[in-house]
Image 1 (tube, one colour):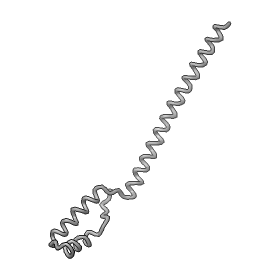
Image 2 (cartoon, helix red, strand yellow):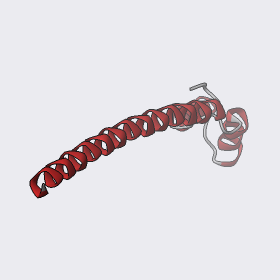
Image 3 (cartoon, rainbow, N blue to C red):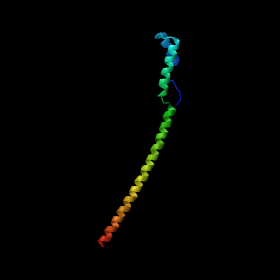
Image 4 (cartoon, helix red, strand yellow):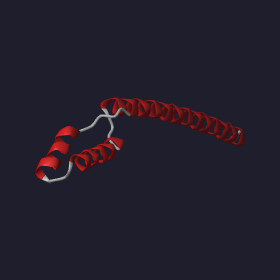
Length: 93
């Protein structure tokens, strides 16, 4: 994740200083802390694209595994039905 600040920290610090009456050091410190807190949880477009690609790969893998299981069960069922049919035919004759 890249450190993209979603707002102008300098403008926030200036507003805190001018409008809220904080001194320069307090205003800048508050803006830095707020910026760090927000940036830590923010995803970028690149993060979202990477997550999407990971999910697509995982879905493809899961679908492939499910197909293999279905084919195994299908052939097992066909073999069991064939064996039962042969046994029934032998029993009737």
